[in-house]
Length: 117
Image (cartoon, rainbow, N blue to C red; front, side, top):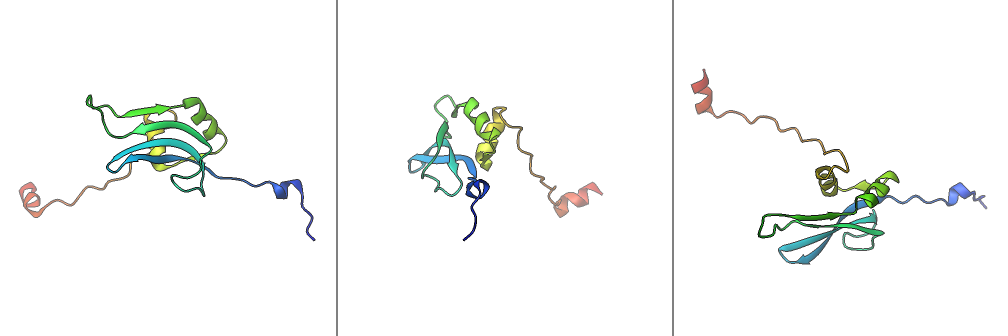
């Protein structure tokens, strides 16, 4: 039989900071949660870290509430934010803003090419 050492019993769990969808059809509302990467999108979570309402109110404001101290804790222990949560954290200065994707210049139509030369 194999010999089990304390390090062999240690199981690591990848924690993701991601959005959990709530609300009705065409009216989304999200909780920002820390969850095991194997859990379903709206399944088990470890902690609620904030909320995000992408539907603007009558003043044109999209509401975001964050527990910044808890975000900093989860990031310090190695939690990985999803793309959208990383974007939100970049907006609020908790993480550096994500890099802007390279967009090559589109080809110029023939009419404009002839006018330039």
